[in-house]
Image (tube, rainbow, N blue to C red; front, side, top):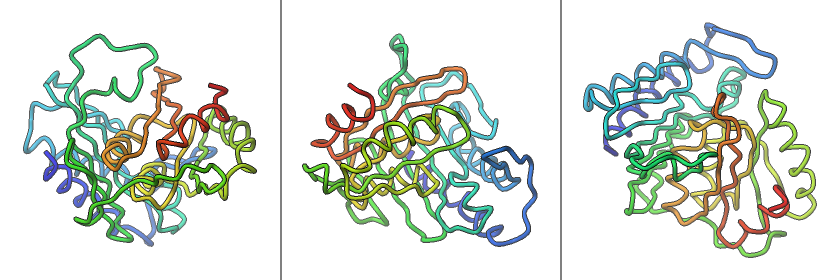
Length: 266
């Protein structure tokens, strides 16, 4: 499964770099977002790789290429995370691919990260830097074949956090509500524009944590698997089932309780 995920990520990454810096076909311009032909081409490439190997698997994709085959495994994919960065030429974007065993027990409401299923593998590929961050359940996490580990920081004031905000009001509320209250208590907060890559950097130990409200399952699925395998703690739950939006905190284990208290009042 991991080799399939890697192959699919590489196929998408090639499309990214073949089109990066060129005149792009825009499918839709939204107030705070943009949809490109590259997104759809990348998603098709990923789906083709997965289904050629496992035609009975199901796929949830950001660009509407979802397929429900009712099989024992399902994939959650973001073909181009950081589309706006890509459009403006900022080299901070990636493709994100996760595979889970489909849940067999009744699903909680609201869903938590565990309700996505039993993790199998995940791959995040950032083509501009050629960074391949991946994990297989129970076998640790890796960056270009080197083991990676999340931060073991215990002091909030030493933390570097990543966050983001998109087109939804709840994501703005998260950034300028809980985010502003925590800003003075940590070393720095960075908003870089690609949630999956942010979470991968938490897994690599480059960032101490990540928080964002209003992200989608495809933004956090692969990163969540990789972060867990790298030793980070993942706390995510679905806040809006209709739009598949999630509230997510991923961080060094010792800092998660304090981050939840500040960001959620929990």
